[in-house]
Image (cartoon, rainbow, N blue to C red):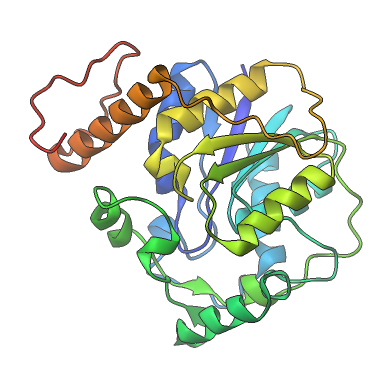
Length: 288
């Protein structure tokens, strides 16, 4: 099985991948979920100097320190930039690069350059001073009402430099297999544009019916999709083709089961339990 490194988006930490990581480990994978500078368990020590290159260097150093080879590097949201840069710096080590509803880089351009005026206004509205940005409203994360309190308590400030530092122009594109997973329905114009770009630039497309933070709103479905991508040979879809999950009875039941499971774990604190594939959810949860 694979060595998988899961990298979180802005304001979050390795904690956000907990449930997806557990499900991947049960499938036999070795899973890592590092936290970037000032994030996760270190969110009480915000670092305004930590820009995109610092974060990319951290992931590179983590992979080297752990002695990992044949790495599947997975980045969510902002971490699309981080993981693309890290993969470019580790050719031959990172063999699969998977982005989940993430930002694709353009050499010489920053996140705020790609997001344009709407994103610049969002940054200004959430300026926390001292070179830091506070988390934006929860509806932008797409975690759902059940998980929102749990999620919000773990968020922290994030360095403005991560959004304003341009992507390095000197890096050669990684030869890794490139996969892009879109979370649908996509409401954010920037993420819709990223999905279109990924298809046009030859990324292998897949889709997941979930909120933007799929590792919270659909952790089991995301783990299953990552497992299938890693296990299977690369597909060759036609340009613009997206592997949409069918709206059938099985999918709807899986979505209902995931919502039930998340609700129960959050309300009871049973974060070590994982539902069996045939679990019918009949545990008496009053909210499902």
